[in-house]
Length: 394
Ligand SMILES: *Cc1c(COP(=O)(O)O)cnc(C)c1O
Image (cartoon, rainbow, N blue to C red; front, side, top):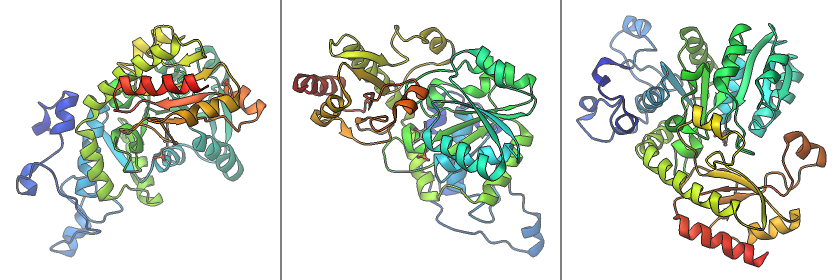
């Protein structure tokens, strides 16, 4: 945190004012979109001496941009990190993190329920092209990590809660085990956002978010971010972003700043609505199981209370019926739209495993009729009414 921002520690103040230097933009309350690809210098020496890490010196847009930097400073402060780097997608952030830390032959430990495309990147690209070895763990028992982490492990990949079954990992516990073997911990914190969980405080090394979900919040941008504290790691991430070239564009960064302004108020509303919906589902006779960390009946509720400050609008559940019946249920919904992604203003429904093989579903520990919903901002009465009419049609 820079000195002049010292009083802006509360998340709501970070969202609204932190990292903005009004005097640089004619005192406009909203910063401009700097749509320039380069900046000019008054001498060749000044150009050579320019320091890329200084937030007041800009040279080339693939390395840094003032609008982008405001967004990064806000996320770094919210996440209790030293520095954040934003990327053109969550996957660009994730793959850059892996390549910054791992090398040919690296051993990686990863949770089974991790975001699917990252799993594909690790098991197909990293193993085939870089002979990396990936060991998957279910992730809900610390002993499991203890059994598989070795001195050759360079990276531990976590996602807590995961976006399929909402299962948690004990971040502090895993950090102690990984630290003993000098392995870095990467965690996808998209579900909680920095408002509900700060993994760097619990011992994680790199925190990733996709901006495409709650941080953007309006289903109008694709973007990602990595946050870290460690100086050596930050230097690597900075260089890898510059070389892979995945920086976020200024227009998306501006929309990200606009999204962050209301992050906390939106999240509280998503949480309140989701809890009411989860309770409705949990008592419904046609529902077999609800996966929502905010329910006191959730198997990892105690851990959730220990490491999270809340739960968001995403959950999954199994109905008492076949895959075909679950599809019919989804199609009977009117407010919930069928669509991938989540974290925006709108309610969504998908069936992530409707076409998964028996082995795949069993490996993930989930049923093929699993329904995943995101509770948007349409109001809990409207969402519950919608679910009720879809159950009635079942
Ligand atoms: C959407 C998502 C991603 C990927 O983000 P993109 O911006 O689409 O690349 C990663 N992790 C989780 C948990 C997600 O939901």
